[in-house]
Amino acid sequence: MTVERALRLMAGFVILLSFAFAHYLSSNWLWLTAFVGLNLLQSAFTNWCPAMTIFRAMGMKDANCGTTQ
Image 1: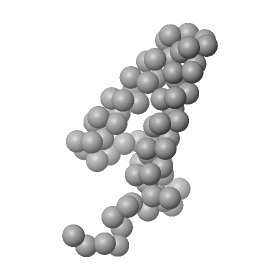
Image 2 (image 1 turned 45 degrees about the horizontal axis):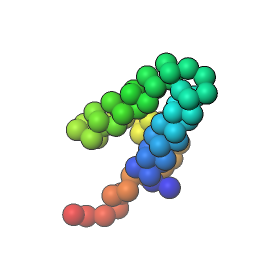
Image 3 (image 1 turned 90 degrees about the vertical axis):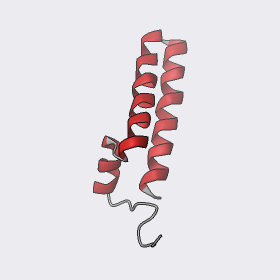
Image 4 (image 1 turned 60 degrees about the horizontal axis):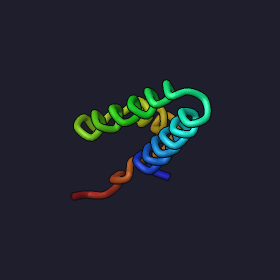
């Protein structure tokens, strides 16, 4: 699994989880959804996200690793 795929997987899971928590527990969990969305937005411009650093430290490779463009 690549860093990019793991990031999308984690973001989607956290968003769905926060929606479930907001429905069943408290609407304050929607702040987590907003945080994930803002983090994805800034990573689109900077190509950096804290989760990407963690995934790379775990040994995951970038999707374009080893290819030339």
